[in-house]
Structures are given as structure tokens and as C-alpha cells.
Image (cartoon, rainbow, N blue to C red; front, top):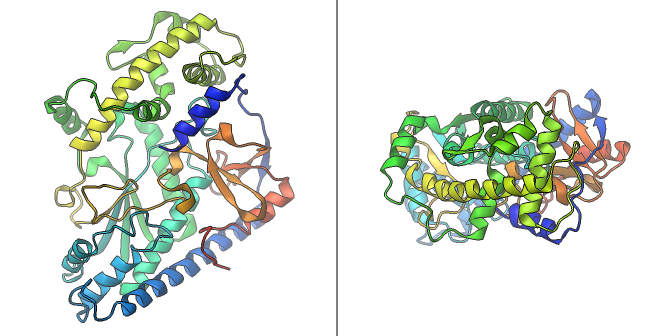
Length: 443
């Protein structure tokens, strides 16, 4: 993912590892929280109307062309309208290369019958903070909240275009890739619960549900398919980007707790050094090991109590071995556990969406969860940062310069909802002026 190489390069260029940030806490009042919600709900409604109107105008402009078939029938026209909606570059990254013929054909099949209109997006694993280099913790934050708000605006636009109720399902990837990234099941479940709460807080009348890969594959089936896979061993095509992605994506806290990964035991010297240490020390340990791996010359000086440099070097070597195997497994698991709607435990045969463009499936719209500026970067890898004028940036926590406080909204989460570079009064004002689509005027 794009955030990993940027953070990696920052660490490579650093002489000293900055310590884990200590920030003020802004507790947002109930009144300010309600203004924030109203702002988001208004922007969702406005965006939905704007996107629906744009799709309708685009289809009308294509009148007489051969792009869409059977547009005089209700199913054909509604399918064409939805397809045009998914050609909007404000939230679809493959809008210009979308296979409109196949997409409309699939939609007609759904709309012609009495089945419910269901869309399904594969997105999300609990945040992995990488020693708080990427995020303050594992909880969903402002990045996920705004991504869900954008999804709701798309759902509402489809409902406006079709005059039908729409169901939207998100399939979480944590358990799909558990054998590669070691994401703890309870952490993944908490992440889904939080995102579900965000969706209800934003729109109680929009049907969005969060599920797991178990709808398609049980853990036993995933293991069996992996064992049967012929491409055993580290693939020769693995790149440094693949390695860095896995290195940052692994749940290292879970690995340290388990004491082994890929049948390789954690060196006893590390186990002994971390025994009975508080979570803060383990955070600093992971942070230091990652930094030393990126830049062996970096001055870490961050762990209290200090740990021998040689111990951190041993840990770095072990982490690298684990990450290389994980990178290979991650790619293989993605290949051997596809989502085939006809094999889902759900009987509604959803229309698939993705957050990573698939060259072999140009008929699947690729959603940009954080907007065009951030491309294929995903919320679970980043921290949301509120800035002046209601603008929000999404970056690794380590890269956010000038962050002075974390934002707390009790109604939404007991964890920080993000960070800000603003004084408290300006942050509260900024929440009430937040921009949902940075390149679309929704005032």
C-alpha cells in the first residue's frame, strides 16, 4: 500500500527515531458532536443527489449510442443508470476503464427479478499501529468514519436512481489473511462492531452490514486450500513493496503474544526481555525494530527501560524472516480464496465491488474510499488528521507534522477518533465544516 513505502523512506532518511507521541486530548461535547453529525448527514444527502443527477444526465447524453442495451425497459434503464454512477471518477478509480457492458448485463439480471439489490465490498482489517508509527491503536477512526459516509452517499444515490431499497455488505479481510498477518479474531471483530456503529450513527435508514470471509470460506477450508496450493515456497516475483506491506501489516503484538510465527519460535532472548513488560514497552519495541529494519543506522533511543541494540538486531532479523513468508502467503491467500457470489452463505447473490483494482475483472467497480487524492490507500493503514477549514488528511501517524491533540467523541468511541493540528476551539469548528468529498462542492 502507498503509505508503507512513504513511511519506510521517512525512517530511512531519519537520523533519530522520534518517540511515541504524547498529545493533549480534546473531548468533543455532545452539542459539537451533533453539529458534526448533521454536517456529515447533510453532505451525504447532497452528494447522493448530485451523483444521481450526474448519472442521469450522462445516460441521457448517451441517448442513441450503443453503449447500453435495453434502456427502454425499467431493468435496463436502472442498470444503465447504476453503471453510469460507477463511471464517476469522484469515487471510482477505474471509472475510465470499467467494462460497462458486462456490468449492465449483471445488473439487469438482478433488477429483472424480485431479488433484493445487494452490493458487496471486500474491505478492511483491523488497524495495525506498527508500534504507533501508523496509527494510535487498532480502533477504527476518522478515516473509517468518512469512508463509510462516502459509501452511504453512493448507496443513497443508487436508491434515488432505482427507487428501490439497497443493501450494502462489507466483507472484512482479517480472517481471510489471518494465516499470513496473524490478525487476532477479537481485534477484527471489534473493528467490525465499531464500523457498524459508525454506519448506524451516520444513517439509521441505510442498510449496511459488516461480515467476514466466513460467508465464503471457513478457516478449515482456507487452510486446506493453502495446503493444496501448488505454489509452495517464497515466490520469485515478490517485490520489496510486497515485503514492506507485509512488514507493516502483520499484527506484531499478536505474534509476540503467541511467541511464534510460521512455525518459527520467537528467539528466547526476546521472550525473556519482554516478559511481564507493560504494553507501552512492547509498543516501543515494535516501533524500534521496524525503524532499525528500515534504517540500521537510526538512533532509536526510545525504549524505556532500554533494550540492548544487539537484541533489537536479532528481533529485526526474525521479523524480516516472518514478513517474507507472510508476503508470499498474503498473495497466495488472495488468489485461492476468491469471493464468488454464487458460493456465498448469503442467498442474495450480491454484485461485487472492490477497493483494489482487478485487471482480470474490469467489470468490478473499484471504490476510492478516501477520495482521488489518496487513490488506493485504505483507511486501516492510516490515521485521520483534522486540519484547518474542515480539511482532513490521511497519513501514517509518524508522518503527521504538528499534531498536538487526539480527538475523542464518547458517543462514537472510547478510543481516539483521530488527531488534529488545531487548537481545541478551531478543531471543534473544523468538525462542523468537514469536507466529505474534497473535490465536490457540497455546501
